[in-house]
Length: 392
Picture 1: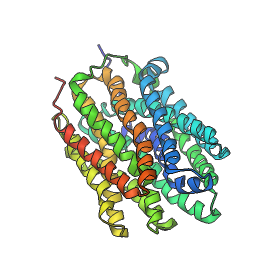
Picture 2: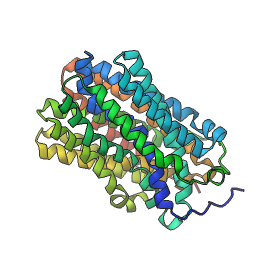
Picture 3: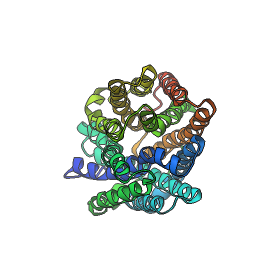
C-alpha cells in the first residue's frame, strides 16, 4: 500500500519554487541557446548543421537523463535529484561561457540536457505528489510547475538580445555569463524550500511500463519533440534574417515566455478531459497552427501572433502528457511513466535540430525547414486523437 499523500501548507508556493528547476534547466539551459545562436554561428563560423548539432547533443543528453531518471530517483530520492541536477545545469551554463571550442561547448550542452531531464522528471513527479494533496485543485497546481520554462524564456528574452546589442558581435559568451548569474539567483529558493523529502519519496518505486498500449501516443509525442525544437531553435534566426533587431527578437521570445503564464487558465477544462489522447490532440493542434503562421509572411503582427499561439500551447502539450499519466497510471508508477513519455519526446528532439539544420543548409532557406516542423506537429496531433484510455 502506498502511504497517503503528505499535507502541504502552501502547495502553490512550493510548486512555484519547484518550477525553478525547469526554469533553469529548460527555459534558460536549453532555450536561451536560440538567442545566442546567430552570434555564435557567425563568430565561430558554424554551418546551420553545426548549429543544429548543439541542440541535438543537448537533446541527446536529455534523452540519456530520461532513460536513467527513475533509477536515479529511486537511489537518491526526488528532492535530492532535483536539487543536484539543477546545480549541474548552472555549472554547464558557466562552462558555455568559458570556451568557444566546439567539443567543450558540445559537452556543456550535453550536460545541461542530461541534468535538465533529471530535474524535469523528478520535479514533475514531486509536483504531482504535492498537487495531489489538494485533489480539487490538482490540475491547476500542476500547471504551475510547467510554467517554469516560460519564466526562463521570458527572462532570457528580456536580457540576451540587449546584451548582444550592447557588447556587439562576438559577445555570445557574455550572454552565457549573464544567464549563469541569473540561474544562481534563482536556485537559492529551490535549495532552501521545505519539500518534506522523506515523505514525498515514500512509495516511489520503479515499475514496468508497457509500451504497446500507448505506442500511438508515444509516437505523437515523438513528433512533437521533433517538430517544436526546430521552431524554438531557429525562429530567432528567422526573425533576425527578416530584419528584426534586438527589440524585435526580445519581444518575440518574451511573448513565447509570457504565454506560459496563461496556460493554467486557457487549458484548464481541456486538461481535465479524461479521454485518452484527446486533450493532447487539441493542444498540439493549436501548437501546430502557431508554428505554421510564419509561412504566411514576415509581418511583426503575424510573428507576434505566432509566438503567442505557439507558446500558450507548447507548454500545455507537456502538461497534457502528465495529465494522461495521472489519469491512466497509479501514483507509484508516475516517475516511470513520465520518464517513458520523456524518452519518446527526447528521441524526437534529438533528431529534430540536426535534420532541420541539414535541410536548411541544403535548400538555403529557413522557411522550408519551419514548414516541415509545423507538419510534424500537425501529424502528432492527428495520431494522438487515436489514443484510448489504458487505465481503470
